[in-house]
Length: 396
Image (tube, rainbow, N blue to C red; front, side, top):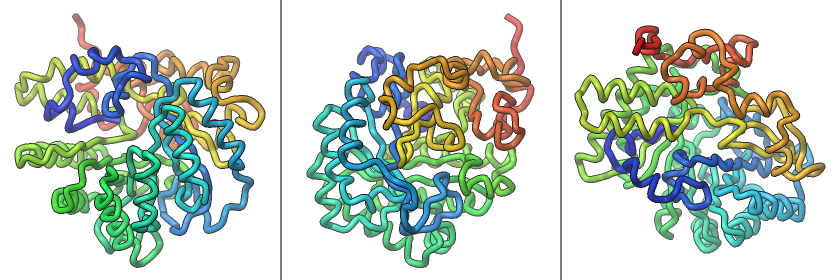
């Protein structure tokens, strides 16, 4: 996760992270990426059921849940373990998490145990009553997925009217004072929608947007040929940076982030150097604190059936199940060779990644994408768009 607004527009300085001691339990949510201990943010897919049929769904969600989901009592036991372990945030996802009837009770319990609770949703089921309920239980944030304006979004979602319903859900959250933001997955079918989505952000005064690079997992694997080429990615990232700057200059300091391609960090830094931006050195320090991809370390995932994964895209590999062992034990058990290597992935990447001068900042980028494209977990991520001259190891 690269905070474009934080880094490029200076909304967070290195001293801010240092001031909080850089431990997960002490850091506010906007600074968690700079923590030293990397206590994992946990994505819990509470259900596989979904009322939509998104063409890039990493969970391959279905209309009705077919596998057994963790019961309410099992969920409470899981939350107790996560709280003891020091997990700072639980992200309730799916499928569509709002389809799970006890979601408010589970989220409320997580908040009472001292964690921040957020949800990732398509937004179409957030009625006024549901928004009020989510606000009352202390939910910190609602991330609503939109992949373009009406025609494009509804095509991605597999349902006419999904865009309008999501906008209603966003409005309902705003009306009760519940922080809400957008989630957008970039690909060739919707890259031209980025300016329009940012226009919507400005028009609706939505305070946050995350632009996700496409990951080849779940139904997203079927869209591999729709991923942007390297030059297209550079143009898209530059556009996001430019529009973020424009929003800040207009007096709307929206939080803008890019996710799932850590080449964005060095790319942003190199741009700031070219622009002779005086803050470039501070940005480099923050990127080093961020440490790049954190699958299996700073982020983890628990599936609807209790299986534990390195992140929400690693559903093809499970480290164990919380019905058999607590998450905290599974997460710290280095007897699993993959878990051990993910904790120190920079030692195991190969090819241009191993020789890249940005390895400490990027950590080898996204291993799932490398494996999907090459059948080699430790090969270079094909979505890295940095040129050879940009990654060449300089002689000191």
